[in-house]
Length: 248
Image 1 (cartoon, rainbow, N blue to C red):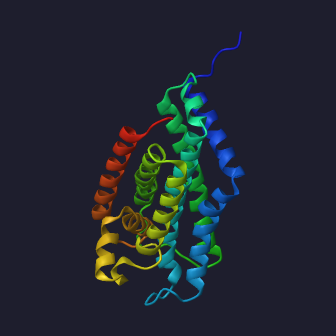
Image 2: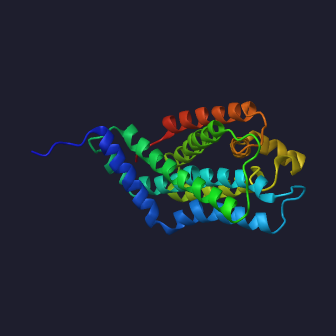
Image 3: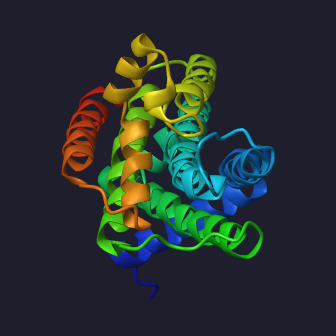
């Protein structure tokens, strides 16, 4: 007699399935892997970042933050919205597996893609652009950036996907992704933005995610302010996603 898989094995199998689906979606690969790498290489080589001896030192943290946003917010939110639209989530919700386990599997797949992004971007920075870590690298802060950034942006993406129509989620997610890129401290430092935009950027999670990546890579700055802001965003976003999400 065939025995049902344990919950842990079922979650791993579902996470592997999510990874295979992501690999088959060409637009997903473009947003999650190509765009952050292109931003890093392009702006590091065209002299767009002023007053920095090596632009890659300024741009690598932003590209890492952009990778987290692309994967956990844009990609996850849009894909989940269309799964809900086509009834895939409803069928998954009827499987002999807690619905929370389905969300866990999706987040595991997101984190796996993000780890691949980190390896790719750091390899590009190191071997193509000549990047070196700063004098005081802090791996724990880098891990915190990855996990808190994923929680904050995945929460926002799932909140939209579980409440809005798929087309509305697609438009809003792409619009916000562009906004984070332009005024989230990804390419242009927050302090170089006009005062009104700087105030907005300082309240958004993107700039603080990029700051934590910079600290993790060795900038030597104090991580506590950005950690507190990102923890707050993560807590609120996850709470809203749990409350607002609908499976059908």
